[in-house]
Length: 411
Image (cartoon, rainbow, N blue to C red; front, side, top):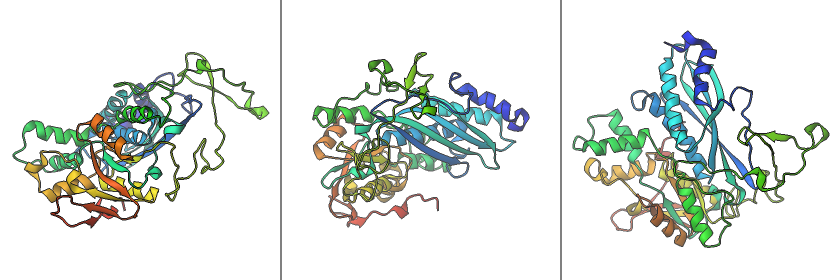
């Protein structure tokens, strides 16, 4: 059976099975947010033949990766996921089974973080294209931005890099790595097909910063294993009176997530020195733009490669870096399948590992790496100079400048 056999409404009826019935069905999904918190929004577009193909991923894993990419962006901002919307473009002769498998893959990933699909759109297209918008919630005083890094801070990678690139190589060239054990081969392929967004790192970060008195305890309990951070109960405080919108006041915000009740939609005033966002802190002193977070951390995810993440953070913060090639966490199995130079290239530029790359004070970085384990490592240090160097503490290789043009670029 193909999409053209069931039509748009038939396809929508199938896709709505993957969404909460009480949310979908109107022109918009309506969700409550809280005072002292911001809504984090990210959108990723995936195109058949560019981001996925049946040769390497298949519909289930393509759906998983699509969801993971968006959740990883939220994790990089310090945000807990709330929901996603999905815009799907398919050809009329696309198999309905392919679409269902894609959505099964998405929901399998999203369900680990209690994140629903709350709507989207369906259109006809000669090329299968998926655009996902993810919504997250982050407390205003703990937003992780790229522009907050400072000279002297350590650079942390939360896990090994290069595994996804190795998995892709195995999928494209099955004869690659003939001496690999079956379990190692499967592990590398899963690193490419089923990446894990590092939302699990956030509670550890908040614990470390709170223990030093650098920040208040979270307004909500930390992310439970497999769960979602709960929002503050509207019953915890008396909401302000909310006159109708027509009279110049604030419109009441009804949410299906509240237990039959009504929750006001709070909109904090613009900060005087901020760039114009809601409750936005001033611009970072060293960076060309972005928001300076009151917490001592900067970061992003490594979906486009470890080198890309380090360079982007440095540029946004107006700092440089020295990255030690001997400290970069690379899968041990690489010693048996690729040269040292190839292993480093995959780790720096391979991309799609979806780890977090974080800049923070050295003592906090050391504690963070100890608590995360599993390949987390301090890979370098931020510097006052804006140059970004790849160094070698073993003295074997000369220092070189890290550049963006070696990683994947769309154009």
